[in-house]
Amino acid sequence: MNISLDLRMSFCQEPIELPVFNPVAVDLLRLLNDPSMEIDNVVRMINEDQALSVQVLKMSNSPAYAGRTKCETVRDSAMRLGTRQITNLVMAASQASLHTSENTVVDDVMQELWLHSHACALGCWSIAMKSGHQPLADQAYMAGLLHDIGKLYILKAMERISRVKENGIVLERALLLNVFKEMHVEMGCRLMDYWNIPDIYRAIVANHHTEEFDRNDTTLAIVRLVNFNSRDFNLSLNQPMDQTGEILPEAAVLKLDDTYREKLQEVMVTSSCIQ
Image 1 (tube, rainbow, N blue to C red):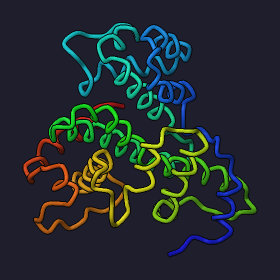
Image 2 (cartoon, one colour; image 1 turned 180 degrees about the vertical axis):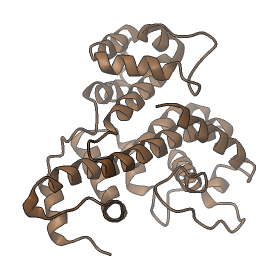
Image 3 (spheres, rainbow, N blue to C red; image 1 turned 120 degrees about the horizontal axis):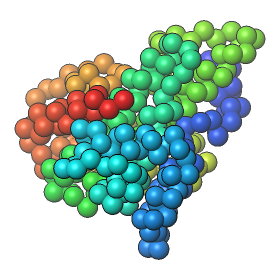
């Protein structure tokens, strides 16, 4: 079922600055390649947002991120994780706080979307490490976290549009999923462009569902593989897809046999412990 032209036009008129990114997280992401970026500056930026700093500290001590010792401050977390990993955690923490709504239908879908995105982030990090691409692990984490960002924008926009009674839109799960299917890649790319997010992540958003993909783009192969498997692990808004028993092309690119799935499922399910 195609969405109506009126609804598509309504999307185009919605402000792109809808709350889908925390400015602190975006600033840190843009600064990652700055050689002068120091850990003290990172900590200062995080601590300027009290709610964000609390969420970062909470997540850094959760089972998926915890080290041998408990972190008592954001600085402790930053020193343990390093600049890239703490930036990943900041983005994840900010995303967790944005996946909420007063509308029960939207809120339920947002919670599922957050679980999927965060599970994919952890899964991508794990696959990068397992497949011998450790230098790409942090990049793969961020790519997994952001690949479906267009869906969050759609949820925020649909909620705003539905408040205008003249639009006659009733928010139902089936409608939301249909709009996701048709527009989440387009809206995700629009977000990436507006916020000037590094090109590597825009490419992930644009190509994580394409029939063919660049087999030289290792990060893209990782995201596609993890995203596909999330369906079978009940960590996706989409229905499971029938696997024929053949190795997925993305797994072949990464030189993984089918034994990777058990560990991947374990890692991704762990993400449900983080709220």
